[in-house]
Length: 73
Image 1 (cartoon, rainbow, N blue to C red):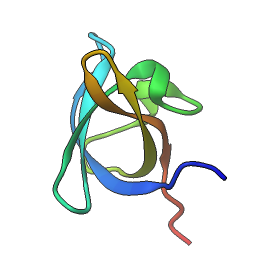
Image 2 (image 1 turned 60 degrees about the vertical axis):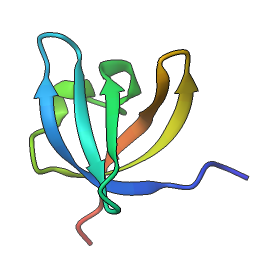
Image 3 (image 1 turned 30 degrees about the horizontal axis):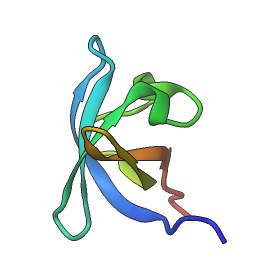
Image 4 (image 1 turned 180 degrees about the horizontal axis):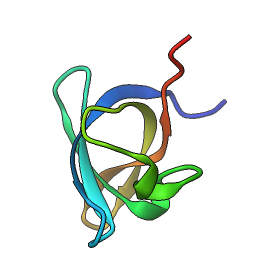
């Protein structure tokens, strides 16, 4: 069974530094890195974009990964 998808919105991007932040629908804040974004990487995102993601544990705490644009269907 795969990880549960969490839904949220991009709130800050630092593309030149390769990271950003998003807020899930329950108002939790998540850090992410460029490698955690599906096709197009961080350059395919913008502040306010709706995304789905999962999370992973790292030595520095949890972070968002497998970030992808949510379908608008």
